[in-house]
Image (cartoon, rainbow, N blue to C red; front, side, top):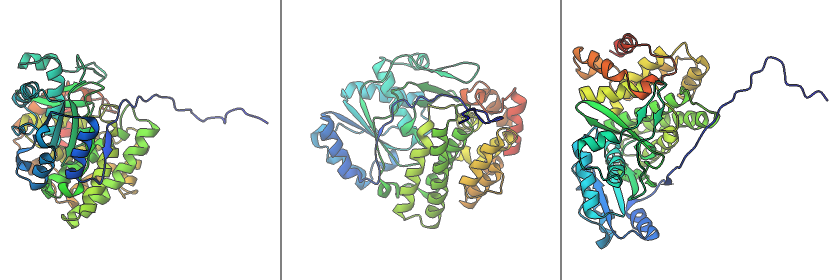
Length: 395
């Protein structure tokens, strides 16, 4: 038998480090899941961190009440884009409460605040200089070298109410003076994730849908990552199909818990690469669009991902086709498939829809140039002119 390899066929080589993944309770009910996990883990002092809009939610209040005397006074002083002052306040609160666990209920900014504050508390950080010293270092290839230190305590249980995917991230972002700073350790992600689709019904539809496009962004830039692998491709492409179906179902019926559940399953798969593969320019420019102009993360993906996909169009066309096919548009360009999905969900698809001054675009481009994800974009970005070209298409 001739066992020689077939002529002309390349063998793809690579590596993938999965790192730690949280335990996920999906299709769960928070009121039952939270006290059950607390008893199982033996937590005696639990700090609830709750997005202000959820502080009076009966389901949240009942779940915290089920913890009994083990729950300390909740922290609710959270703001979008995770400002440094919020992180420092929360860092002090974790230390003051001597918390064995933090339960964070809310969106991506809340979860990032807890991740970074837990890291900072372990490092004894008390001021802005200390937080800056904990940042991840980024080299010229967009590789993030870990932040100093490690998060060992407190444990983190995340109850996401949006589709941002922060609950899986080995990275977290916090903002100071209009610049988004990244933090990364292999232990940064929460230990446990609870997906409660009925609780998610309280999330405003526009926020749910726009953060769902953020999850689409995670999946698309996983497929287009320099670190893409067969495993991450399989997860990301399945995520795109789940997200399209779940988001369109939620758009048709905002009170359908099954649609929210499908979105949660989609973000779970889409977020498996956060901090494990390098993303590209949609994430990188989006960080600075949020920091400079205050655009929410989900909306940054709505307006930027189609333009970045178009910029990358000539690179790895087979990957672009796979993205379009997963979104149910096998005959379309990936950029058009994403833009049409965004428009079909009633979301803004262009920067000009957001009332942003064109003067802000140069500042966004300047601050994005050194972003880790911009540096790691699959089609190299050579300078400010490339970034401005993307922003012009997005306009």
